[in-house]
Every structure is written in structure tokens, then in C-alpha cells.
Length: 284
Ligand SMILES: [Zn+2]
Image (cartoon, rainbow, N blue to C red; front, side, top):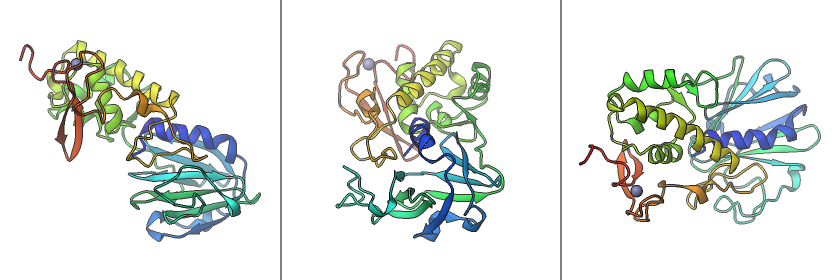
């Protein structure tokens, strides 16, 4: 699932390609994945791209917005010529590497015949037309208002396990399973630890770890693990999977102490941790 660094990488890659382009047509191949009246944005120019949490937002010249959520398996591919779009290595989405493919749900065509393919295998993603940008409620990790003070406040106010809190998009937006797991490892905190039982030092370490992990993820242009669908708009892969610390590394040695990494389930999602570096109880 694309998290903050993946969506930021999509935004960075698309900005130079589509800003100032005029939307000529939008072909909706799956009604479930497109919400609102496409005619509100046809004929308008893309004026800016923004990312808020995991949501990518295109602002257009009549002040409407196209909001995009990638959910589990969304992709946004760009082509200079949408009639002959070809990408390398985009399997499992298509065997021919040609777009549109089986999972293409929406095609946005610009007047210069370039365009975007919104692909989504699982069909949970969406594009929504709106008069106001759909900005998530939580504080974005890259914004100035994500302060240590704010972070400490929400942590000490919650009895939920810290990993569940980190992924609560109403509190903090942009962190998903990859960056939650690896940030907790870096800060030496057990994913099951109750949020309000974290010490000041742990909160501070976790705050720094989140920033480091998220920024590393952006530097690496996101994570494209073996069973993940994330790819960049040109069809290429991100490289952050090479820097995973504990995420998807069950039974592999801890990068710090070589103890084998364990996996447990929390709210149906896998949590990975080193039982030696991330203790639930001190001296336990
Ligand atoms: Zn360890």
C-alpha cells in the first residue's frame, strides 16, 4: 500500500510532466473508482500537485480538485503518448506491459495526447472530483505542525498499542505498515507497547526515527517489495525495500543484534520486531 514516501515520489515524478497541461478527456472504465462529475474538470489546466498524508491532489484552473487515493494497489502511470504506452516490468498488472491493461480503471488524457492511467488491481482506490481538497484529518509527518510536542500529546492521551496509534490517519497521516514497523524498530520500542506507557526518551526517539525513515523512503523513491504493487509513474520501481529494517524480514537476523525477527498480527496487519532490541517489559 502506498504510504507517504510512495505518494510523495509519485507527486515528484508527475509534477514536471503534467503541470500546465489541459485535461482533454477522462475515460472511466470502472465507475467504482471515480466519484463526482468529470465534466467539472474537463477543459481545465492542472495548476499544482499536492500531497496530504497518502492523498495526492491535483488542483485545476477553475479551482476544482482531483483527489486520488491509492489504497491497497493503486498506481498512476504517465505516458507521453497514451495511444502507444508501454512500460517495462509492470507485471502482475499486464503480461504485455502495454497500457491500458486489465487493471486500468481511469484514463486521463491531456490535449497533447499525453496522459495518465490509474490502475488498481484490488479496486479500493479512487479519484474524486471536489470543490475543496480532501485533506485528511491527521497531521502530516512532513509538515511543520508535526512537532514533538503534538506527538507527545497524542501518544500520552492514548492507551492503544503504539503501532496502532502510529497508523491512525486521524491523528498522524502518511504512516502505514512499512514505516510504522521500521520506525518502532529504530526507536527500540515494541509494537504492542501501550502508547501512554512510553517514556519521554522513547517518544523523542520515535519522533526522530519516523522523520528519518520517512525521509529515507522519499530518497529511495518508495518501496516496491516483491508482493507489492507500488511503481512510479514511469513504470520503474522504488528501492526502499533494500533498506527495510524489520518489515517483511520475519526469521531474518536483526540488523542490530542478529536475533531472528518475529512477526505478530495487530488489527489484521503484520507487525515485525526484534524480540531482543524491542522489549515489551524492561528486563523482561
Ligand atoms: Zn535486535
